[in-house]
Length: 612
Image 1 (tube, rainbow, N blue to C red):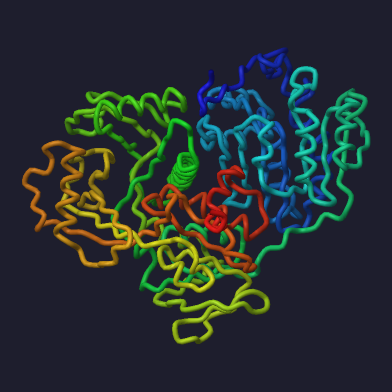
Image 2: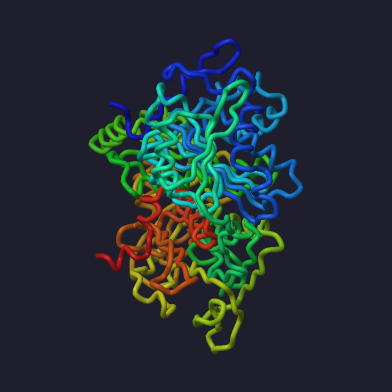
């Protein structure tokens, strides 16, 4: 039985110089070339590039990513078109992705015109883990959503599309790709006026397209093939409506990621922060842990934290590739088992999940001791894509990269909100109007329920005290280590460890008792490490995290108030939640495809509390 996270890569073969999939006994494209086929069948069949001319946004759904040729041809056409859409989203399903090695091999011999784009994509390809992986290209103006799932899970894709590439191996080779159920799901996601194209001319496929409510028509096939098929949904293709200006309240990791995401979409944002600078409050710590929380059944928390860790990791790696200072240490994270019983549970979880070892594996005590630089008494999980992030520096870098679309108003406390035309009036504590905007997002952490519209949300402050000790570069631990607490490597001459988590405790003062609690945690992580560490000599910091009962984030509309969203509830997992949660909020505001599977995203819906 396959593991929950186990993907089977494509079994690449070559037939007369054309790539083929060994398990499906079929070639990926015609012998006449991938680029020419993509241009004739898919771009030509959906009316591109004319269909996206002058548009703000254009979204394409593809049912089989394969070698990536259709995406690369579309990306190349978008780049070369002066009348192109301002932003292009390309959502593509793939059950059997290529390994990175096979990708490089294919495109080393691939179309010369597409080869530079394929090579640029090679270093960005996500690990072979199920989920929706977002690759932001051309400064975020082009986004590739790689959906590593069976096509039968298309119901997990949330979005409405302007064009569809219905692609896959021949119906006789892979009938599931052409099933009545899949074609119906595809058709449901097409906007009025949207066009669909496929190289397939089978009568049964055409009948299924017609049964799904589409107008179907034969067209001239490619390179000697007599016919292909085009289909469309009747109506006029219209733009999704998006806000003219958004107010985001709170400049912590939630608000900063959202402001960055909206700015990359060209949406003007006013970011209100009551403190004198961004990244204060719960986001003001020296360093926090980036890693996911595996579970043997891959529950909702596991899926959310995995998606967020992969997304943050990809973002920060891309910054490094661009020469942007990334405020993190990607040295990996060790999560030590408490005892042999937990070690067995960790190993059982891995046996059920079977993730790629570069993402998560289990290491014995000796191997972890060597990596940490300190002897430990148990083995544990090793997160190869984990590390530490400096949240305050991350906030500032995100806002710097937001550019001219962002207006940052620090030392400005928002007191209340009231509906108005066209959306919301933002007032300060004295009732003076700060701004009128189309939409508002409450990203104010534990302060969200102070707004009348969100008062019913069960978001409570959880006091967390982090302890800081002087540290020399290269001193142990050399990696971030967790075990009912965490300790980081040296960061800017200090080491962070802790932390406490007390829901409902509102004391802002640093307390010696909490330093002692953190030292107990540190000693449990690294036995013998705390000798000579005096609680009275430690520095510390207190922050208040927004906690909710189910430990999942809170992302989405607030009640039935149009244009009002909440982005909060991150608890102790802010670094792992922030990127996909902010991107989800941006997608909801702009009517774009969601960056998460539908069931995973809806687990964060604020309405879940009212349903209980």
